Length: 145
Image (cartoon, rainbow, N blue to C red; front, side, top):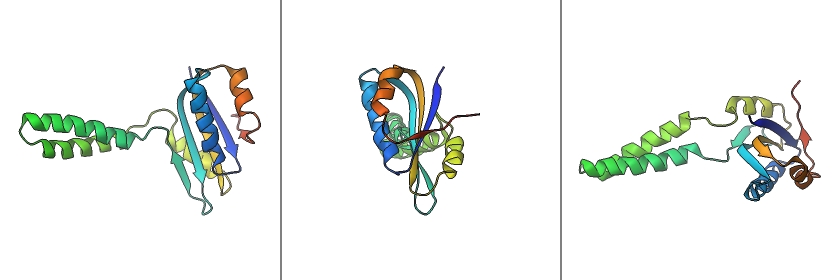
């Protein structure tokens, strides 16, 4: 079972900085992340989610490959590539893995402009070492009631 942690920062770049630290710790096997998303609220109040994995691009690349392969069979690889890439992009846009996007946007709406939030879904971690690494980053953790 995965655990969700939400950490808010007054700086709109700090959450991305901490996420990079977490990816580094994952390479050292200190934490196993299922998902890590940064939400930024700009000065105009618009919320933007920065996903760890771009599903639209991944879907387009995968769909393009399979479309070109099938197109080769029917002697029209360019048409197959175009149709496959479009179908893959649509499929990627409709797919949502990890943390629910609506939940993240709703929570990020409560932030003040110019701030950021880090949403992390953790499978496993070595808590003492992970907390030591991110201690002092200036974040505020949200707790569910």
